[in-house]
Length: 148
Length: 132
Image (cartoon, rainbow over all chains, first blue to last red; front, side, top):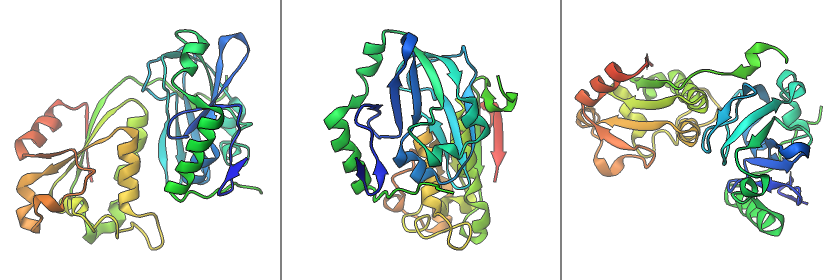
């Protein structure tokens, strides 16, 4: 599924601005990554820095920072959690986020409460698809994937 | 674990960025907001205080048209990135008459109109003060 070329994955969970996706992993962890919308806005990503594993992150405090040549900003966090790990491949090759945004998770986190409670603050499925399309159209966002 | 430079473990800090540059030095008008966005993303409480010619960046119609380099992203986009990351914007009210800026011309991104004394307080109470 896509809108203005920006890919959407129906099975993932998203924040209300569709900046990040969240995927349920084994062992009570959640993987966090950037959406196709976010990587398109950022442009070619040059640096990713993740909070050190083991760090407690309250809701509202980012799990990572992203820098491109023209954009800098946080990877937001919507629930209390602990950083469980970072994707070292993405840290070494940040432009993977521009090529395969849904295969390239950035951090894994362990929610302070249950996974189910953490997911309650996110959107998924048909509601997320509707919101995703609205964001693309409202802000005139078109996909800018790196292919080379 | 890979290269240590990829990991963040800085403590929370307060930073004030004093923005004095304006349209006459457009090449100095993007990076401060880029830095503000990065530092805010790193848990810093970032306050950008516009004074001197910097207040022109808070005047409707100016940052929307201004770029640091030809063909580049507009300054208002850099400012909005910093705001989205959590930075707060303060505008020096005493500087406004000198640039003939009225209150109703101030862009919505400005959080407060402040005095010179409030800037002094910010500088004295912040962990870091940067001047651009």
